[in-house]
Length: 402
Image 1 (tube, rainbow, N blue to C red):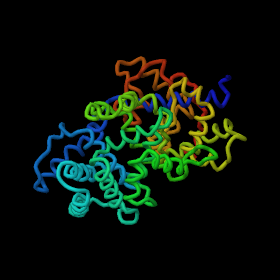
Image 2 (cartoon, one colour; image 1 turned 180 degrees about the vertical axis):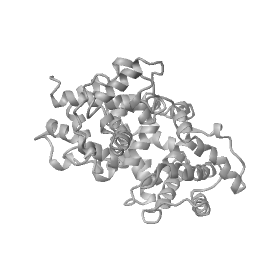
Image 3 (cartoon, rainbow, N blue to C red; image 1 turned 45 degrees about the horizontal axis):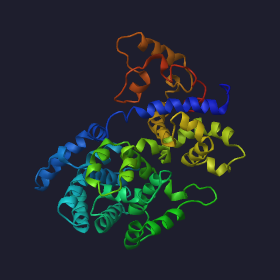
Image 4 (cartoon, one colour; image 1 turned 90 degrees about the vertical axis):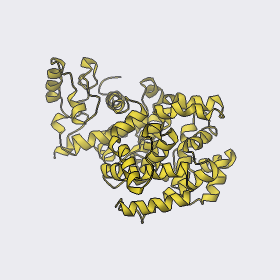
């Protein structure tokens, strides 16, 4: 392949985002949670004290507490500032989860949760319109009726319904049914989730038979973002000893979940979409021309999945998978939103090269790109860095400078 070939360009840009993507996930899941949401977790006991509840040992919280708290918080994590949702909402939700798992029924907890939200002024612009509290209630009630309140047991059960080639997709589909699919009653959802045969029918109904791609509602940002967190987590892996009643093969899938990350979709958000429109779409049009309808290229997650399926062997060889492009949210929010095109290695490299050379020749050895992105892991890796090789310049036309 020549360096001007669209596929060659795409491989270069994918290597860059694979490298970026690995930065936030360099630590374990509990470190990830405890670093990014450290203040929020500390606030759990502050909140419990205000309610007259006994303090809880935060270090002793089990994976099922953390994962369920995380999943329910994601219900609220859209169209509102991330800091607000996690600093104000997460402690309330985590407190509700502790009470749910240790003491109260789903209905009792949601009643308390609604009161706590009102008392401590946790609001969401779509709380009533999108029935967010009802989504919490639905989730807790289904888990209570069918999975002993345990979301990890729930995911393992669904994992047993799939093969190596589709278990992640089935878990994603089940999570959608658990929380978001209002077209299916709680009673019917429990029946579907408890039966492999019934679940397989539901799963097939969510896939377009012509393309084998998800139907519209399964391209769900918060679902794919949350599931990815669980798959890269050491927290879940370390909890698997408690679930030895499942077949060893099922547990091994989660123990070695990195092998299956290619089944995840790109979560996608406003900045992912803007980045895609300005940088990726042109490349994908060249690579997929005459293969897909123009309408498919309008959906970033869908078009990247189509592309991945088309060149799967090439991408797997490079350890690429579609979800790595979610990091374009961070990248575009900094470089595009702040119009830092002149510092962006995808647009022009001269200034970036000077910065990189200064870093390589200094004692500090901190990466200017990672510093700008405010990533905790910022060490320069020298001339092997995908930025320093200068293959990325000109991929973007710098449209955000206009």
